[in-house]
Amino acid sequence: MGIFKAYDIRGIVPSELDAATAAKIGHAFATLLKAKRLLVGQDMRVHSPEIAEAVMNGMRDAGADVVSIGLASTPMTYFAIGSQDVDGGLCVTASHNGGEYNGMKLCGRGATPISKANGIADIERMCAGDYPGLTAETRGGLEVIDLLEDYAKHVSSFSDMPNDVSICIDAANGMAGHTLPRILPRLPKAHAKSIFMEPDGTFPNHEANPIKEENLDDVRELVKAESAAIGVGFDGDADRCCFVDETGKTVPADLMTALLAGEFLEREPGAHIVYDLRSSWVVKEEIQRLGGIALRDRVGHSFIKATMRKNNAIFAGELSGHFYFRDNYVCDSGALAMVSALNLLSRPTNQGKPFSKLVENLRRYHATGEINFVVEDKEAAIAELKARYSEGRQDELDGITVEFGDLGDDDWWWFNVRMSNTEPLLRLNLEARQESTRDARRDELIALLGSPE
Image (cartoon, rainbow, N blue to C red; front, side):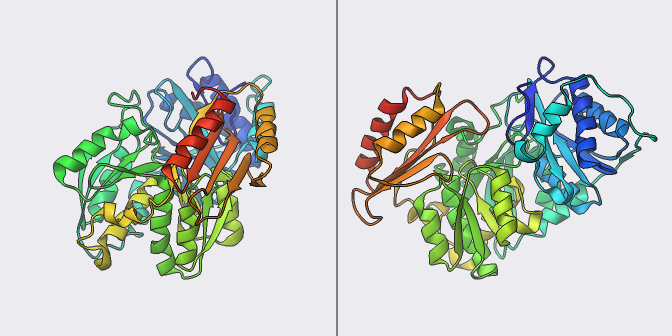
């Protein structure tokens, strides 16, 4: 089955994922963890109630008691798993995918991630046969609890806003529209104007994927119309978000990581901060300038979270808009990223400074953004790049990264090409000191890799 991905389970309903398959997944998950108690949340997709009920039935047939928290964003589910005495749990969601999709994001005890490497592949094998039915002496029970207020208290506890800040929010008809109405009243210094807050699994206004520039157009316009200090767009399950400044210009997630690093290093000087290897070189420079220890890591939440746990890192950010917080069970949260950005803008030292001014110095290099290619033989393509660019400084932490020149030189540039963990693609990221170098090297690599997707 093609629904078992690197970091989650995801497929079209009902052709790839239906209630019968969900029951098998629930049973396999409970069996894999030898679970006595599991927790389940679900997003607003039209088929999420059916999928959630089926997965809980499977867990109960395997003997696990189930705690249902009902409607919940993925970060709220992570919070619930981390804060409750459970052996693990999952959120029924397909993140930013269209309304025809559904799936599951899985965790072990303490909200530790379960990926293909440490459980999803086992679940896939266990689901290959017929549904095993009731395999426990006693079928597990079901408890329904409401944790939304507890979650809102948790998120608002990160707020530290001495001054007022105006913000515009696009919930994209996703789960941010369920959680933020409880969170925002707890942030009295945040003055919010919101759009598309009604959770709607058909996504009637635009795709719930803020990493695509066109999906930020509505919040851009709102920011300008309201003369707001900042804008934020959430994805479908609210674990990711992307920001725009007061002019409506996108602030890439890597630059947000560099900006927010200061917030956490002020709180904990010398702390470790993790960033993914697609990020601008400016992220490492800023973390080090602020006295932190910068840790460059592979792309993917399971890698980032493992590195954070190993090094007790306080914060992490990925180019995709995932921001991770040690004091949030080492999990990602769009709402906490929003709160952190509001804290930043609220600082007395930043009063009167537009958001664009705070970002201005971080835009000192020129990046392509992520460019995707459908390549039949991905391994061969990466091997060819390794040979062709052998004169550069290379590493293979994730795909191949090659750097040329010295950072201060006009001709300095670097690129990374890696295989997607979630799609049949090669992904290119490239950055240079000069815009002309970026464009020339980008065109050179496109000629090698083929037409971008």
